[in-house]
Amino acid sequence: MNNLSQVGQFCPNEYCALYGEIEAAQIIRFGKTRNGTQRYRCKDCGQTFTQTHGTLFYRRQASRETILETLALLAEGVRISSIARAKGIKADTILAWLRSAARQAEDVEAVLLKDYRISQAQLDGLWTYVGHKGHKGGTLNSTSAASFGAAP
Ligand SMILES: [Zn+2]
Image 1 (cartoon, protein in one colour):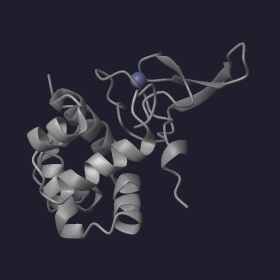
Image 2 (cartoon, rainbow, N blue to C red):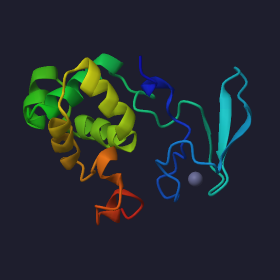
Image 3 (cartoon, rainbow, N blue to C red):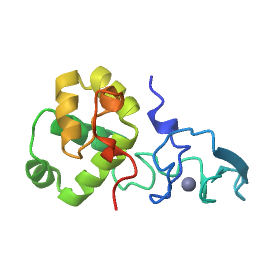
């Protein structure tokens, strides 16, 4: 089992310092929506959002399997253009999935390693598409602060 589909308490505001920082302390519960969904608020920027907002599978047209399978193919070195053609998915869409996946790299990696038999080296290759180091590279050995917040 994995908790990928439950991840998501991070600020969805991409201009916020906490964007992508999963379960930051500044994310607080903020009542519920009319249909009972837990709502959250980012104390940093004031953005409110529901539990699932921002997760990899939120509001995607494609299924969880399709997204993960696509990520696995990318990790195996299949080119985006090839996948796009074979699956009838826009390259932009695939890149968007990849960017979302990079924001929850640890969980995505866990699933790909276990369920899709992708190696760590292949995962490292996967994140290079989006200039992200994956969770392994999140430590001090990296000069790339670019993975957080530096984007325009
Ligand atoms: Zn925020």
